[in-house]
Amino acid sequence: MNNIVISFFKENQIQYHINKDCSTITYPCFFCGGHATITLKRTYFVCNECGERGSLVHLIKFLEEEPSSIERIQKAEIYDEDRELKELAHLLNKLNDATLANSIKKTVLRLVEKKV
Image 1 (cartoon, rainbow, N blue to C red):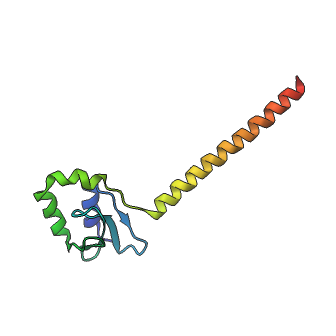
Image 2 (tube, helix red, strand yellow):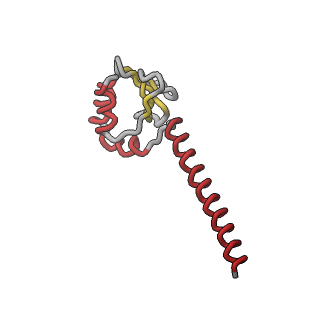
């Protein structure tokens, strides 16, 4: 895996998602905000929406020439299936815990009412 590409995104606090094949990263396109993909081995990118193409060097130059765009890029979100599934599982567990807690609470209240 090419740590240079990952370091670039981390250093600039840009959301990214390493794809399942571990050979590409999806990130918000610097030009249109859509979903772009960069290869980790050759650092070549293409935007799936606007068609912009280039290399990691182009992205670095873009940020140097357009420093005001970094905030827009940092705010863009990338869909990460694994992250979304983990969040959903966490929420379902919380819901299940809340349901279980309510069920236990009701049972305890019924037992208390029977004793009184």
